[in-house]
Length: 198
Image (cartoon, rainbow, N blue to C red; front, side, top):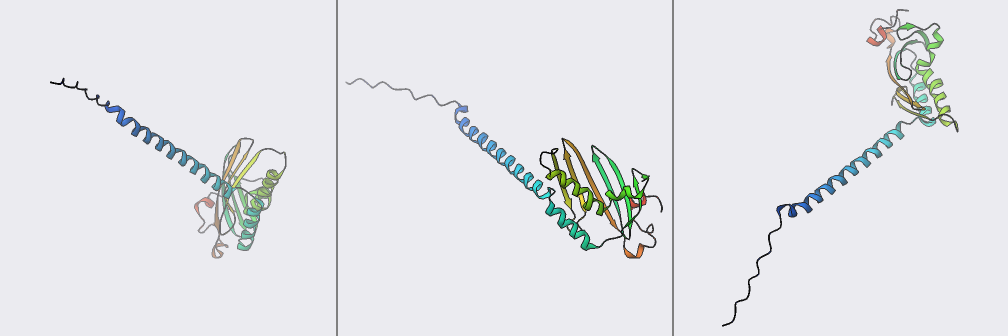
């Protein structure tokens, strides 16, 4: 009678972790890839937004043209500046002329000093000077972003960085309707009420 063949014991089952490990690795790599893609998409979106709002001569010229074509001569403007040179400027313009202006709640010593804080002053003087600084070769390291109003062309927001010092503006423009020109304090917005009476 032949001898029975020796029985080979079955291999021991793999530990429970060994089956899960390749799947866990796969999820980990998938999540890392997704995170990298999200970061790349965010950087691209920020660069596109930054490029769209970067101050250029073409954008400034287009904004100046919109403002001229709007022919607005009567308005109150409120500009809040934050950053390295904070301040709060309020100016009243009637018939294209400055009739009143304050800096941090105090009247300007001379009305002509309020000109840079009018829409015309920003578009024709301040932003033109900023462009010249940006275009100057070998000058200080500058970066400027501006958001112009799509309809009227005035700068709604402005961000300027030079040598790691940042200044930003928030601009509110309140157009004075023709019927209230005779009495500008009759129904002016709250921001212009802070100006002293002319």
